[in-house]
Length: 138
Image 1: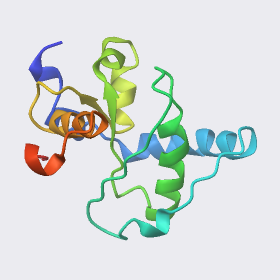
Image 2 (image 1 turned 180 degrees about the vertical axis):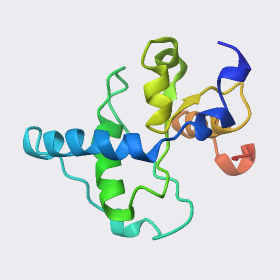
Image 3 (image 1 turned 90 degrees about the vertical axis):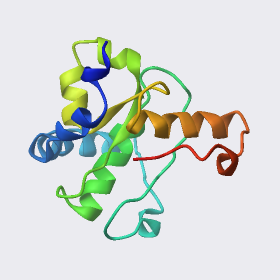
Image 4 (image 1 turned 30 degrees about the vertical axis):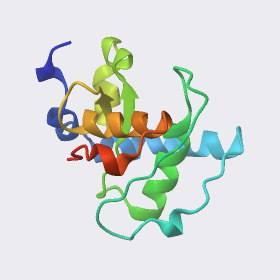
C-alpha cells in the first residue's frame, strides 16, 4: 500500500447516501438482535468536530462502528461525517472501498493526516503524555 492510497483521499470517499442505506439494515439488527445501546451522545456538540474515543477487544472484527455510527447518524443526520480509524490490514482486503465509503480511515503512525491521530491514541495507550508529544492532528 502506498501513501497515495491513504490519507485525505479516505475522507473524500465518505458517502452519506451509502451510509444511510447501510444504516437502515445494520441499525435495526444491532438494536433488535444484539440489543446494542449507545449512551452519552448528548455530550457530543450539536455541530462541528468532536473526538470520541472508544475501547474494544482489539479483535479484527470489532462491532464499534456498526453500533456507534447508526446512533450517531440518527441523532445528527447524514450530512455530518462520522469517521473511524481502522488498522491498515483491513485496507488490504476487498472491503477497502466499502470501508472508505462508510467513513473508515486508514490509521498508520507513519502517515500525516488521520494516521497522526492514531499515533496519538497509541501514545495514550502506552501511558505517554499527549501534552509532551504535541503530535499534529488534522
